[in-house]
Image (tube, rainbow, N blue to C red; front, side):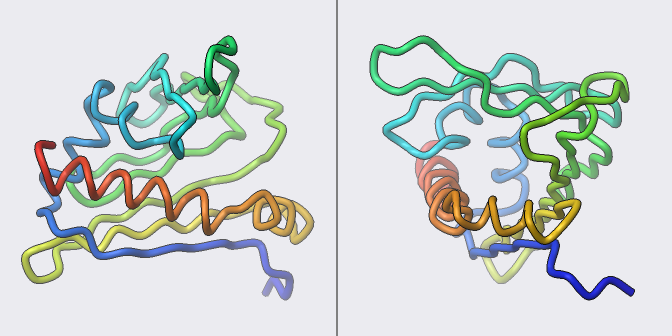
Length: 156
């Protein structure tokens, strides 16, 4: 049994059904509206929602050039319920050497008339967990969930 803390998590209730939250995850034009905290801009390079499929986004601030944000591989996809991806692999299960190794488990559960959106982010050690937390995990991921809610609760 591990005794060190290697997990960060966040959860919010979104006032839209799981089908709408899923749609915002599987359409690049919607994902880029919410995936990165504003005022940063997001560009979706690859979004192949299947096990072994690529997940790649870039970001930019102002007029700067786009820079890498996430390059990952989807591990599990259950439409309207669960998405699991990792930065330790890239497309077609190829090993990667990320600057921050993590596995994200995203779940959508129907709750009343909305969706309980939860993210568990697993790290290889307590140091990486602390690094991600100090980078602003709660604020950053919280902001993106708020942006996701704004997309799906309005025009989606």
